[in-house]
Image (cartoon, rainbow, N blue to C red; front, top):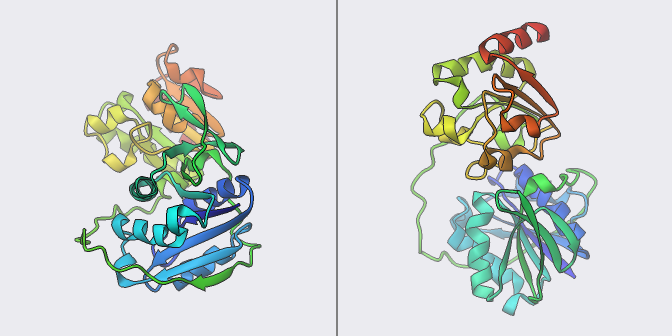
Length: 314
């Protein structure tokens, strides 16, 4: 058996999601190959070669891969996989916007069922994935000849970035599909860590009351070197930008420390952060559902408690 991992990258470096996906691929058994489809992505290729557990890095170079358009990358995956996907027993990508855009196209062309957002590999053909906002775990067994899988990265440890010595092999790049054109990208700029990669996250909810009130969380996040997040209720209320949203319809995170401030703990929010190693909840309602998953809870007014925490950290 050989598994193929679709690398998520920006042509300069690999995204952390790729390392988590490699771990899942290794647990499927057999060798692990990584496909880097990009433009002048030598640095990303070199990074992929050193990932522990990777045996080969396939390099498809072309200007039409520069921006990761799914139509082109999916065709490259199919070309590498061979007729009916015969070259690989498993094809995996992270369950990020990037992977979710590519693999459904691959699965459709191979006429197989995609297995989405797995959190555990039980055996080469059996996987676990959350359903009902994480309230139940489905065990899925696939009889398809090639398994097409997206990986919920919070369910797997990251493969070591060093220690590997994989060979690099150039493959023929498919032609530009011409089905889409890259127009532009607006990136949110922040001095804080990226939300899905942060080891510490400070999140606020509807209990903050307003967007201005989120400023009370900034000193706490600064002291901890944390990213800032929010519940859907806070985002829908216009308190903070959409890219702060943590939850089932936002970003799935699993930091070492998650501090939930003024978040009641709706099931959709819990689905996005309950795998955090340590959860601290601050809420004035002692019956708030967030306390059911919290390791530490503080019942009190956040506008009193948060400044006290900052003072203690100082």
